[in-house]
Image (cartoon, rainbow, N blue to C red; front, side):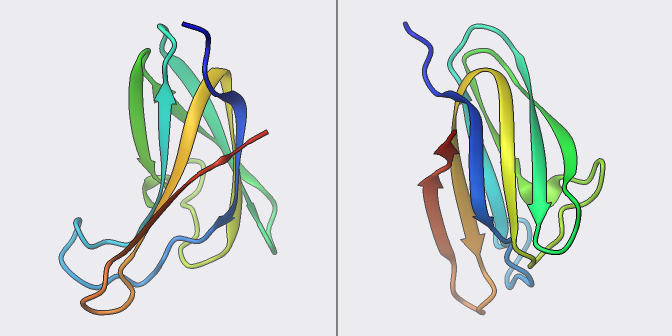
Length: 124
């Protein structure tokens, strides 16, 4: 099978919803990157975050096994620095091999309401 995906992916409109309502972890608001690595080898991706009023932060290393998926909650990224909640960000994911990236957001800021949206990241 031919390689599928791209080596660089962009999410320009991130913003981790905060605060959340409901029991954790099921109803915690989040932004999430879903990565598909259809190649046969494990790869280490890097993720950099960009803000309106601060210098970029990263890289955050992410390992995805060969012929595997990995779901990464942006809320859980803390090294080199915790991603800022409820602040606009953009991020760029770089991979040594082609991968496919989807972006998800779960918004539970309103009591009793769970909003889930998914879209493909932009392959650059």
